[in-house]
Amino acid sequence: MTSLQKRVYEVVKKIPRGEVLTYKEVAEFAEHPLAFRAVGNILNKNRNPKIPCHRVVRISGGVGEYNKGREKKLALLKREGVVIKNDKVVILK
Image (cartoon, rainbow, N blue to C red; front, side, top):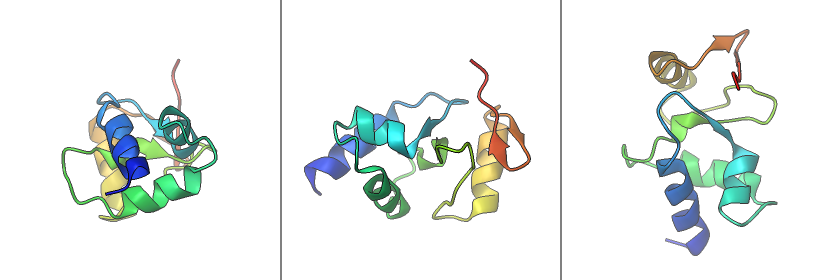
């Protein structure tokens, strides 16, 4: 596992239930601000259920893809209380 992968997984593990971060935010917290595409590739390969990669979304608010299927990602986010309208996450801050 690369140091970037370790950092990405550590950041994503800390995303609280019911909240999301964007791929760009994860890259920034992992101290690789331009690696947001790499973050997506890293999370696509994740098979560890302790790393909640479904909590990472696109910068546009779009839900994005998920290695277990987009519908599963939507269901998990909704179950955790994330508000989704027109296939976009509604950020309530």
